[in-house]
Length: 114
Image (cartoon, rainbow, N blue to C red):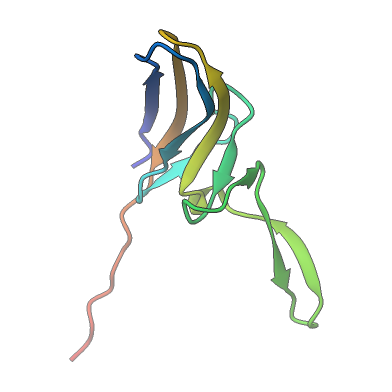
């Protein structure tokens, strides 16, 4: 727990024509927490479900005790994927994206009492 890992993905266009509208996605593994501002290149978008992406930092509306709604930041531990809009990747070109995560402490499960 607490160790930092870097995940990188290399996208290569081995074709003879440019690849357009390239989106590069890297999952944030379960049991890890994304480290803020570690994405390269910047900016990237983030997702809590791996499907819907938005600019970072992610926010969500949370209902308060009085019934009102308040915008709050999504905890980094809830980020499940990052995505980069690479755009056009020329023939023969390479693009690398990366992010860093810290390994979470294992969840402590209490034993049931008989």
